Amino acid sequence: MPTAPPNERTPFTVTFQRAGVYYFECAVHGPDMSGTVTVEPSGSALIETPDQATSRGTREATQDATNTGVEAQAFAIKPAVAPNPNGGTVHTLSAGVSGAHTSVLQFLPSDYTVKRGDTITWTQADPVQFHTVTFLSGGTEPQFLQIVPQPGGPPKLLIPAAVNAPSGGNVYTGSGLVNSGTLTEGNSWTVRIDAPPGTYQYVCLFHADDYNMKGTITVTP
Image 1: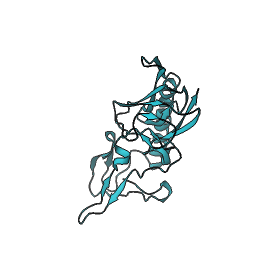
Image 2 (image 1 turned 60 degrees about the vertical axis):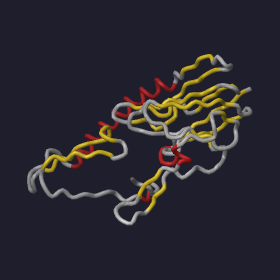
Image 3 (image 1 turned 135 degrees about the horizontal axis):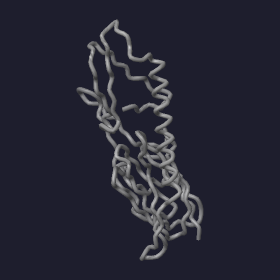
Image 4 (image 1 turned 90 degrees about the vertical axis):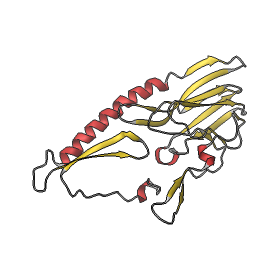
């Protein structure tokens, strides 16, 4: 798992010693993020050149992004709204959304307005991603990954409890850390907004830095 900033990461390189078809996948995201490498015997002609493969991949990625963008836009403009029996309104938003062979690493909609006392539920429906909904209130983001050396073998990668577990309760008053904990597919998190009128930022601790997965809640009286 890369832990350095994007511009400081070293590419992973592997050399294939035998012809064949080799399956690979991401150990974090599983089979939904997988592929195959076909290795031809040394000296044989390739089915397509590297430039041709790059062009094909670019076309596929562009089409996937277009299809996913359509799905995300359709969801983003239709958040669910329902009366709360306890008063106020319940708003259902999304923490990310899956699409055509890709994921939208954004809160949808990313900027939203509620009244003080309203309740917001973020759902997480992406089968290959995990997110948090975290109000920092101007504080520092908890470190989302700790690298612990071991006497033998690779280092141990730990997600601290401050990231993985819910903290701060289910009422946001505009101050302090309020965190959903890690949300995986099918999970949701609900918080009541009891903050003074203003605009408050929240982030996903896993994707805020690399993918700018951030949002704002504007509170009105």
